[in-house]
Each structure stands twice: as C-alpha cells, then as structure tokens.
Image (cartoon, rainbow, N blue to C red; front, top):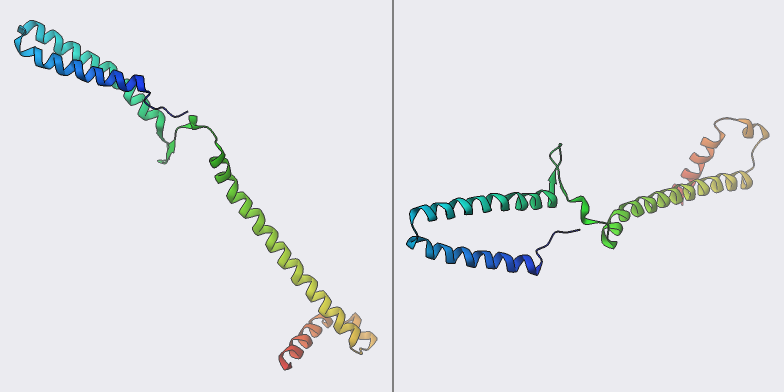
Length: 148
C-alpha cells in the first residue's frame, strides 16, 4: 500500500499554513510572555509533526545492512511486478530448451552420418570391433565433405 496525501491531509496542511501566517502577522502586537508561549507551542507542534514525516520516509524506502536500497514491502504484487519477475525465468527455460534441441539435433545427425557410412561402405568384419572405427568414419566423412 502506497502512502499518499489524501485531499483531507492537503486541506489540513493548507489551513495550518494559513493559520501560521495569521499568527505570525499578529505576533508583533502581543506581549513578550504570550509570544514566548506561542513560540514554545509552535516548537512542540513541529516536534510532534516531524516523527510522522520521518516514519513516512522510512516506510517508503529502506536501506539494508549490506547497503542496498529497497522499496517498502507493503507495495504488494500487481500484474506488472509478477510479469517482470517471471520474465527472466521464462527466458531461462526457453534458452535451456533451445540448447537441448540443438544438441539433440547435432547428436542425431552424427549418428545418421555414421550409420549411412557403415551401410554404404564395404568393410571387413574386424573393422566393426575396432575401437578407433568411429573416429575413422568421422575423419572419412570430413575428408569427403572437403572434396565436395
């Protein structure tokens, strides 16, 4: 909840300034004792008013122990703040899905290339048991692509 000046508070402030101006105009004609009492009363009124203003300022912004400044916690969640906080999460999930799709596509195309090389080439049976056979096929496919 944001603290805002309501029309009543604004009217009261305007009336307070008006009465203060009227009292200031009438003060020179008053005896010294009464003017001192008015001065003390004004100081007390200002002392009462200041904590309210300071509490409003403290409630709108807060400085954390690590030096960061945060807004007041009573602003509440509205539609825009929910969307703004969900947008980075959505971007992260979409990015991870795109990475997985590209890797799966690359893996599938590598397996397809190896299978096609195995099926179209004449090889001795010992070649299938060789540990470096897959590497040989990859080099052969790269050399064939370079010649094309």
